[in-house]
Image 1 (cartoon, one colour):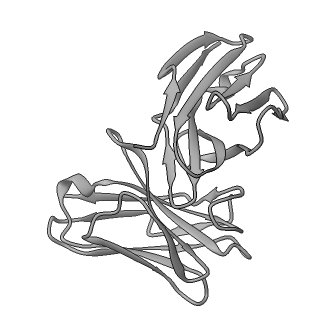
Image 2 (cartoon, helix red, strand yellow):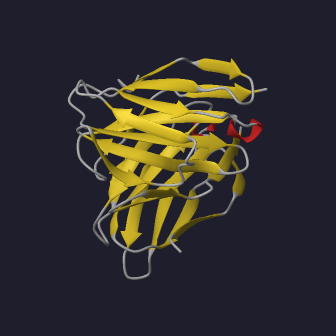
Length: 113
Length: 109
């Protein structure tokens, strides 16, 4: 158990819908990272927050957004969902910005029908 | 364009063999290189490398970084069936993290 929690574990929804994925980092970690893993694309970095501020941005679509709250938990919002958004979404946390060990949560499996 | 390339893509060996996994990179603003093991769940951290030439070791696994030639290797000695997994290499930059496609390792009993 990494100490990073993610909810929900599985999510099945229809195209065009909007979903919110939630992540709680390890106690004391200030950085939260979001990743998307699909069979054809591998693990893709989406976005990173450090102590409530966006600090790094990867291949995140405009339909996706994220935020980190004062209690350091983070949410990833996916809207206007398409079939191709079906993937495993991981959250990871670390104590510092873009350095140090990243601890991954168990992931949320999103299926868009 | 920043990129991380792992080789081989797939490897099948017998238990007890030694394997070497490769990771090369072309990036700007390098901060660190990380190795992860991924079985049927979330990646688990193996090593973080920031300095050239210093070997990191954990049991039968070891890794080293060459910042001049821009590559890293992950060695696994005396492999066991429990080592079967996808091994991911990632490079952390100032403003993003790039993962390689991974090396799928399968250990035959």
